[in-house]
Length: 476
Ligand code: GLU
Image (cartoon, rainbow, N blue to C red; front, side):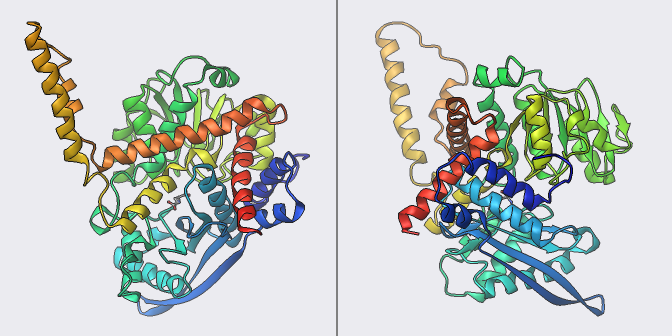
C-alpha cells in the first residue's frame, strides 16, 4: 500500500484483514462472508429534556453471527458514526475468536457527549436507547449482549439491565442481557479493571519470551521499563496502575485531552488520576512537566507505548517519529493501516488490539456465565478447598513433630495456602490463563511462518481460522 491517503477506521480494519487472508487458503466466498458486517441498525429517537424534544442517533452493528450471542460494548461519544461502529464490531468478532470467548462480534454507539448531560438525563437517554435495541432483540441474553465502552460504565449497564428486565418480566436469565454491571446488580468482581489487567497480563506474557523481547530490541523484564500511556480512562488508568505498582515499570508520560505530563522519575499514577478527577485534566499537576500539545509525547523516548484512548492516534502524520520499540494497543484501532506499515518496516513490535484489550470481553464472558448459572464463582468449592488444604498443613505439622524438627514455613505461607479462592481470584486466574494461551497461539504463527512478520497478522490468522472453522462446521 502506498501510504498517501489515510484510510478510514473501517478501511484500516479491512486492509489488515485482507493482508492476513492473502496468506490463507480460504474459499473467496467464505472470506467475503467473514469480512462483511452482517447488519447495522440505526435508530433515531426523541427524549424530552429541558422542556424540549431532543433527537439522538444510535447504532448497533452485528458483524458476525457465527456464534451467538454476539458481544461488544456500547460507546457514548460525539464522534460515534456508522463506519466506526462497524469497524469496532468487526474487531469484536476477531477478538472473541482469538481469546475463545464463545461470541460473535457486535458493537453499539450513541452519538452524544455524556458530559453535556446530568445523571438523570443520561438515565432517560440510556433507557430509551436500550428500549429501542431490546425491542429488536439487539439486547438479549442469547442474541446480543452489550457491555461498557468509551463513555459508558457500570452505571449505564445497570440501567440497561433494568430496562431489559422491565420489558421481559418472566425472563429468568434477564441479567445476562448485558455485562459490566455493578456487583450488586449481577456484575462480577474484577470486571471494571479487567481490560487494564489484561494489558498487564499480555505484557507479562510477552516478556516471558526472550526472543520476542529481542525482536523489539529489548532485554530483561518489565521492571524498570519506561512507559508512556495515552488516555488515563478506565483502561489506561488500570494498566498504568498495575504496571507501576506490581511490575516495577516506570510511567514517564501520560497524555490526556488537555495535554500531557512527563516525568523522567516516573509519575505517581494514583496521584495523577486523582488530580484528573478533580481538575478535569492534567494541566497544573505538580512534580511533572506539562506539554500542551499532548500528541508530541507519543513520540517520547520510552520502552513501551500504550495508546489507551481513541482509534487512529498513530497515523501517517506521526508514525515515522514514534520511537518506542514496543506498542501495546490497549485501545481499539489506535494504529491506522498506513502507520502499521511504517512501524512494521521500522521493526517496531505491536501487540495488537484484538489481543491486547481482550481482557474486558474475557471477564464479560465470565460474568455472562455467572448470570446464566445464577451462582457466584467459588461459592460451592471454596470452603471445601480450604478444608483439604488444612488437612495437608495438619499432616505436615504432625510429621515435623514426629521427626522432632520444628516446621517453620514462610510467615505468610499458611495464610496464603489455607485460603480458598474467592470470585476475584478465580476471575484473575481465568483472565491470566486466557491471555497466556491467546498470546501463545499468536506467537506460534509469528515464529513458525516466514511469511508472517508481525503479531497483528498472526492474530488475524488465528482468529479468522477459528471463525472459518465455525462457519464450516455449520455447513455455510
Ligand atoms: N467494549 C469492550 C471491548 O471493546 C468490552 C466488550 C465486552 O465486554 O463485551 O472489548
